[in-house]
Image 1 (spheres, rainbow, N blue to C red):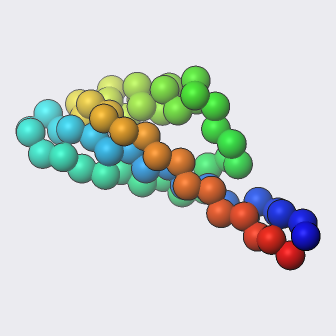
Image 2: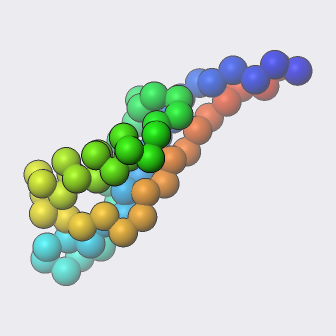
Length: 65
């Protein structure tokens, strides 16, 4: 069997400046984002929205033939 990467998605669970919890989803990311890349993404989102990241979740979809 052969495994081929199809797509990846990043979900950031954030706590908003208004006290609300939210999920922010980004699709079409690279196959294996590094911890440094995910931390930088979190910093960018916080800078743009004021939301503090609580959890970062990476979902990877592979096809196995």
